Length: 322
Image 1 (cartoon, rainbow, N blue to C red):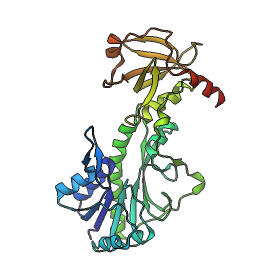
Image 2: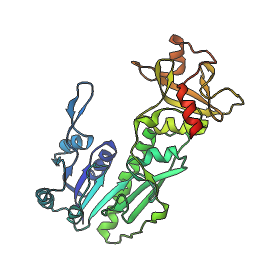
Image 3: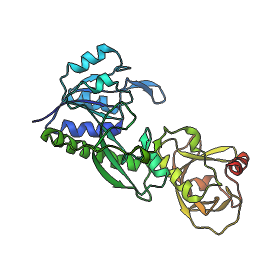
């Protein structure tokens, strides 16, 4: 029998799952999403991707700033949901809310739990050099991504995957996974697997300060940093008095003994920069006030000669203390 669903989510990752549910046999009775936020240069209030889709589909939308008040519990209870599906919602669900639907709350989480619990599992998986990640559907409890696992689908991490490309793959996989998990709920043959807390890692929220490139690090680590921080906050370094944002790069072998941050070569194939081990070839960069461009296009107007230093002098001091 089709399930009656309340959906809670906010960004594009959640919108993909909502779209799949709206096209399924199940009935989405209401959508919960974050309040509209200022966005763009004009800082006008902007609806979330989930809200926009829900409005287009004619589904009731709720945007409470909190789910703690008892009045919100009554509104939620009034939808008569069999299950609440939660995807990157952005609000904590109190125990009273978790207990409202008869099948509880299911969360689509973008990692193979128990690895990478927390806010930024996609980026942390790339930064750590993981070979694969995936989607886990969990039965939510009061902990942070600690609930029993109902279903897992793996996804390899390609050598050129950015946070954006991996996000898109996992969003599609998440939609597939929640439909499969709901089929088990319908049939009553759900199998729960408890997580091993000893294997868990915390995927902390990204901080802009992490975007600064430390050229004393190995090139392979910097390659992962560039990919993990594309499209936000975007890896960056200093080029004289300019902040250079690095959108695409590639770790390459190098026998150079130049100081980390030294430009070894600059041409149509990229800008090669010495690192703590190997070199990083910058492929797509962005100057202040400009847009991301292939290196060759920027070098035409802004020549860069070998021997130029990228980064800040204080960085070398900090890296020695690491």
